[in-house]
Length: 514
Image (cartoon, rainbow, N blue to C red; front, side):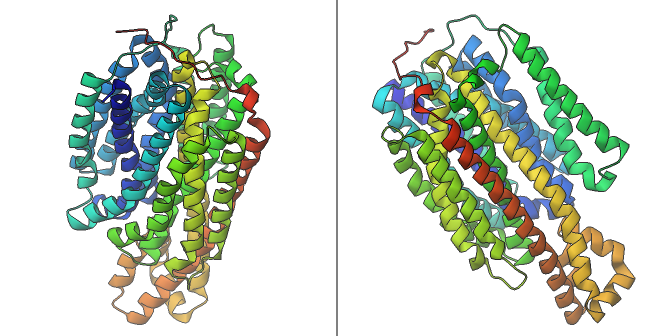
């Protein structure tokens, strides 16, 4: 097999592993919460620790790959991700798991930052469109089987195995990378932008930390206000530093091309809307409807399998139809899918999500390959490392801020709505009189079923679970409305800003390193 196809195989194996980890973890979160006695904030950090470190390290990893070799760095990323996965599986506390997830994120950042650049370097012309179509299909495949694999592993042998499974996959990918991929790097001299790296990383961390802690500390508290102001100041420092430097980790001049800005907004939107909602959809299926991990994974199949089927078709269409049309259409469909989920109420079954799942799968399948190809098509091939790092940074920032922002709304609304529903029932009022504070915490952390079982009263249990369903679904409708609006913003940005004349013609670029 030609080395360029080995390159595609190795890259897809590594990216499949790290994306599989995201969807697998979503389904396992309720079991992780019960096993490690985690709070709702702890659950958010299981995802956000991963997303934040990916976002923080992506741009720098792209520059390091350009400097020292993308193949070498991709192999290092695989090794870090695999080792951290082992530690995740061995974790005995939420803190240990969160730290291991952060290291996973560093490895994931390295792989994401170099993956599209390695493909772009190996392929040109129509073959590049085919390669990106396959890459998109792998993204869809990870989404497709992730919930099912996660549910099967979690329900069968325990949640720890969702991390252990990464180790052998990572070892295979490392061997493929070191033996089959040709080295490539940017022929121009690069340097690490420490000012940009530190200011951007801290700004993002402070923002997400404020969103996660806002309800507990109070949005007007000195701590939260200081965190938000600090995030804004550090982001301003980052932008000034990038603008003034001759070789920044993020070249702001790239955004003078409207297409680059449009792709970035669209990437942020899809992550902050549909992908951020996966956490809350999972909690609805397990905590409200009472499904186990495997049953939850099965119910995600309409979305995930459709995304898998549509992705390669969309990848091939990128060479025939304008990217603005494809990406705008995909995000508009995602927005409509989320709006359809506003029909969920306390009496609904999981089939209330089915129309949204079907349309969501179509939208994701259309959008993902276009984002992958367009993000590197708007820059010269030698700058593809920075471009792919920028695109994936916007994706992870969207995921982290989306989960944290939606979580802030969720934490404030669920207990309020649930307690109101509980107070409307005589049995509920009795429960409030005897365990009001415990119920408030249980509504936030999803411990309602355990509390209901401990009441030893069938009527009290039914009333409590119904109140939780009312509170959860009332909040859920608000979340999907906000997420849907964000997806529509991304659709408009794609249609207005992405212009084909901003795209760089695909040319073959020889490897600059042996």
